[in-house]
Length: 369
Length: 257
Image (cartoon, rainbow over all chains, first blue to last red; front, top):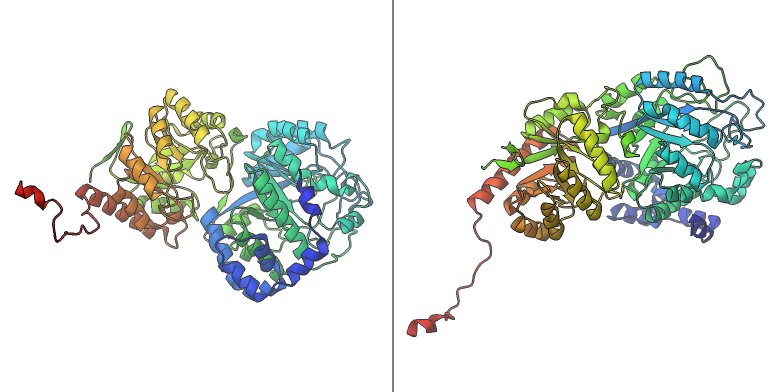
């Protein structure tokens, strides 16, 4: 059995309707309960919860400190390639975006690593587009051993792979895989992914199952906010997380909430999510699930990040470049999206410490994998 | 207050402390100094020995702090033994808090893997303090395979829920031949005092100090509570409960014989 069986038991429109039908009584009950269900999560992300935002923020902060302390984990993305055979309507790497493409060589990767290590990073996230011929398993099997000596924790955000392939990469030092469903709205998913392997909704939906079976330590979930109704998509994410936690109980989970960012040639988002709504979503995740790691990237603005890191977030990136070779410079490749918070890692660390939190560079060890 | 002996070390403080969740290294250092603690546990995964950029150990460089590396993050006995050897090399101590919690949600310890790893590590010369459920039989088994102390939980780690396992802790304390350190779930000084009154040899506290609004004062409060509980235990608590005095004594007939 996979998540697909559960997914098929749910109907998008019914789920959406039930979220929008939640009342202040549902929200108050959800806040008062010691253990919260998915129905409570629906109430917390519903429009009815908007007036309770301050109360939700206080509770979310308290629960996060209890579990994670006054700490924030730091990570940085390392873009290896912007080659991509997919057409995704919202992404700068989309095949139909007529821009020069590049995949970093070993020498170029090591130059990037040198800059990143200079910042102090010990946890890295490898990112690529989907171009299986040039940036497939053969490439990954060369890259992991190359960078493993430099980092204590290696994550990947690449195309979905098979279970055996994940197991192979885990043996080479891969700890975490992020795979965002983008949207759980099946018809809309097809519209946004008309061409390439990514157009296979089902294969993507079952990727976390393959990761769980392959014994990957941590799985990152999320949807791209802006494609569809964010409340319904977030409910499906929570449903997915609940299934995974019960099925692959030895695996850790993290959630991200990427809001669609502009890129060269891109369209504006179909659905806008306000800052206030994003805070509501972050707090709702925390209040519903005390253990999930919640991650915030440089897609968000300086002002927003300064204030929201204390409300439930457990990991942040800083100083990110979304173009391959962007750290060492000299390649000038296409970036995936424009980042919003452009401060250096040192500035972010200073900001975190100024708020009475500790910035954590290392919270894993390569001996553990 | 009697000193506590575990393996080759003697402790005057019966409050052991953790190093996670503090807002800064400096704050952690000040709180741990205020606690009077002499045994401080450090997650191997947080220590950067390989790259020499470690941001924890400098704050623990005080003669009164003995380091107790822990294996947090390992999922089975094999990984634990490997991590323990690395910790011994990196932190130059053969003391080890053995933590095997394959479940990352509640961080509950795996009794089977913990027993296996304890046996193996004890043979390798480690002073093993395993973190476990408050399971009296498991504690005896661990004692038999060479654990230097046992560390049963009061309630799930980080929950601050106090001694939910009270009845089982009593049995463990009553029958243990090795020191019993109540670990996890101690959320308030009163919980620590209660554990000490029950006869625990020590307690380990982290979250309740680190996440408090004032970690230094909270550390001091725990120090006092642990001392109070221990002194009360040594002084022997007055019996509780009221024994009824029967108006017609049940055994008075014996006087007539």
